[in-house]
Image (cartoon, rainbow, N blue to C red; front, side, top):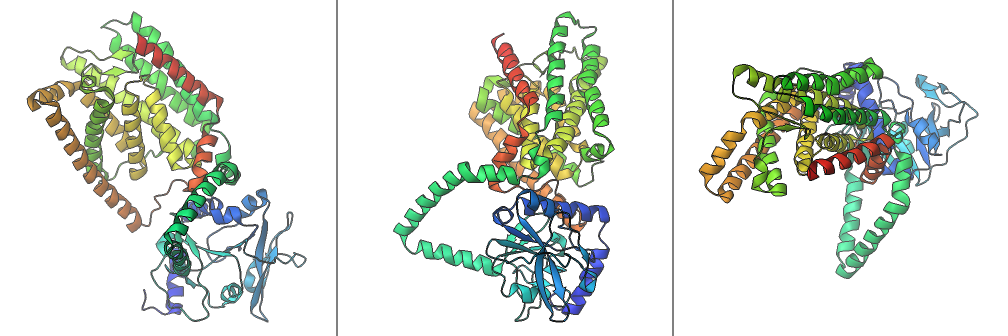
Length: 543
C-alpha cells in the first residue's frame, strides 16, 4: 500500500467504497455520527463545519440536527473554481443545499459566511487517512488550502477498514488532529506530540506538577457535577434522552406474574408440579416475550440476534461455560461461605427441583428447570433488554440486563452470583452476535445446577480442605478465562477479516456514562421493579 502512488490509491479506495454493502455503510455512518455527537470537541464547539456526501462519502449530515438542537452554527463549503479556494457558509433553518461547483451541494448564495475561530470544529472528508492524520483527497487541494489558516479543531471521519499506516505526503498537505471511525477515536501524530510535550513540561517541576495535579483533580470534580454531567445530558443522542419505559413495564409484568406463581406452590403436588412449572414458564417468559416483540414490530425483531452460532463460537462457548460454573462458585463462596454450595436447585426462590432418578422425571426436570428457563429468560433479559437499552450505550445495556436478571430470582444471598452470570451472558451475546450460544450456556449451566451438585460435594470431600478446593476452583477459573479471552480475540479478528462491524451502539465518552445510566433509569416502572424486588427478597430471606 505504501508503494502505491496517490492516483493508484485513489482508484483503489474508490473501488473499495463501491463494494461496501449499503446496509453496512448506513450502520457504520450512524455509528460515526453518534460518536462525533458524543465527543467533547462537538460539545465544546460553537460552529460545526460539515460537508455534503458525494461519491460514497460518509454521511455526516445527521449531525446538522444535533448541532442545531444544541444551538450551534452549522456550515457547508462553497468552492470557487476560479481562485481554487473554499469558504464555509451557514445553512440557516429552512434553507436547502443547492448544486454548486463540481456538482457538490452547497449553501445558497445569500447564506452568511462563517468566521472560524478556535471554537470551530471542521469535519474533513477524504478517501482515507493515515495514522498521523494525513488525508488522501481527490487531488484538488481545497481542504489543504483552507486548513492552512484554520484555527479550530480538525477531525477526519473514515471507516476503520479504510485506515492506512502511512500515505505519500507533500509539504502543502495538512493533517487532521483527530480521527473517528465506527469503532472509536484516535489522536493523530502532531496533536499527540503537542500533548506529550505539554505533559513533559509539567513533569519537569515536581512541586508544580503536584499543585497542577491537585488543582486539576478539584477542577475536574467540580466541572463533572456542575457542568459536564448536565451538558453531557443535553449532548446525549436523542434516542438516549428518552427513558426506557416499555422494557421496564415488561419486567414489572414478569415480576408480578412470578409473585402470583408463588401462590400456586402451596397447591402443587408431585404429580402436577412439572407440568405446572412448564406452563408457568410459557406464561411468564415466552408469551410476554412474543407479545412484546410483536408490539415493537419487525425492525425490532431483527435486533434480537436470532442467528445461528458459527463454528468458531463452539470452543468459546465451552470455555465460557467453565468460567460461569467456576466463577459463580467462587462468587458464592466469597459472599456466603462454603455452606452456600449446599442445597437444592431452586427457581425464583419458589420452585425446588425434586426428582427420583427415573428417566421421565429427569426429562421433566431438564425441560421445566433447565431448558425453558434458559430460552425464556435469555429471550427477555439478553435479546430484548439489551436491544432496548443499547441506545444508552453497551455498558448500560449490560448493566441493566444483568441487574434485572439477578433481581428476577428474588434472592439477596444469590444476587451477586446471578448478576455475575448475567454480565457474562451479555458479554457472550456481544461477542458472538447471536442469542443461541447464550441460551445454550444458560441451559448447560442449569443442567449443572440440577445434576452436578453431588459431584461437586464429592470433589470437595476428596479435596480434604477448603484451601485446596478453592485453589482448584481458582486455577480452573483463570485457565478457562484465559482460553475464553483468546477465543474472543479470534472471533473479533474474524469480524475484521470479513469487514463486518462488531459495533452495536456508539461508545460514550466517560463524562456521558453517568447521564446515560440516569437517563435509562428514569422510569417509574423500573423503580416499582426495584421496590418489589426489595420487598419480596426480604420476605424470602426472613421466612
